[in-house]
Image (cartoon, rainbow, N blue to C red; front, side, top):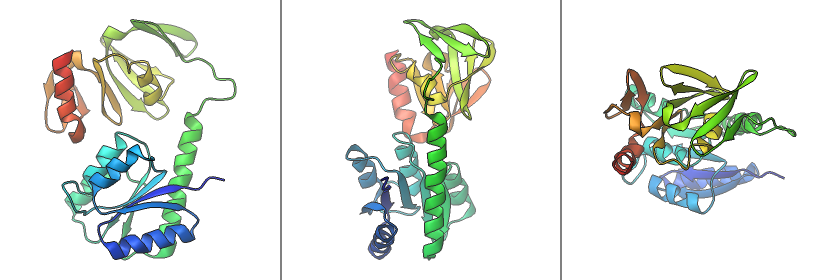
Length: 247
C-alpha cells in the first residue's frame, strides 16, 4: 500500500504541528516540520518526498521559493505553497517554480486534503506516462560520440559535439543540432541520461540541457546560445561557471 511521504516546511511551530496531525489523520507520513529550507534540503539525502507543503516565508537564508528551486534540481516532488500575505511580485516568482497549488493561511482542512489528493494524482499520471511500457521500443542507441535517435519512422544520427541545447516539450524534447531543431520522442530527463557522462552538457533549468561549449552569454536569469534565450536557475549559476572552467 502506497503511503505518501510528505515534507512539511513551516517555521511556525503551531501550524507545523497542526499540519503534521492533519496529514497523519489522512493516512500520510509526515517528515518535519522543518523550520528552514536548508534543513528540508539536507533531508533529501535521508529520503526524498512524494510531496512538499511549504510556507513561502521561512527562517534561514532561503525562503520557500529558493528552497523549491534547489529541491526541484534534486527531485520532482510536487510542491504546495502556503502563504499568508504575498504581493504580486512574490506570487509571480513563486508561480515560476510551477507549484501544484497555493493555499492561503488560514486554510481549511478540506482545501488541504483536496490539494494534496490532486497534486499526488497528477504526479502519478506524469510518472505513469513517463514509465516504459511492458515491451518498450528503444528510442535511442548510444555510442561513444554519437546517438541514433528514433524520429518518426527512421533512425537519425546525432553527433554529441553538434548538440547545442535540448528543451523539454511535454513527453518529448526539442534538440538543436547545428542550424536545425528536431523533435525526439523522449522526455528531457531520459534524453539527458545519454549525455550525463559528458562534462560539457549541463541541465541549467528543469526544461533545458545545454552544451557549455556553445554558450555565448550568461546573465542573472538567462544564458544565450546564439539568439536562443535559455532560462538559468539561480542556484546553478556557480556550478555553471565551475563547469565551464573545466571543459
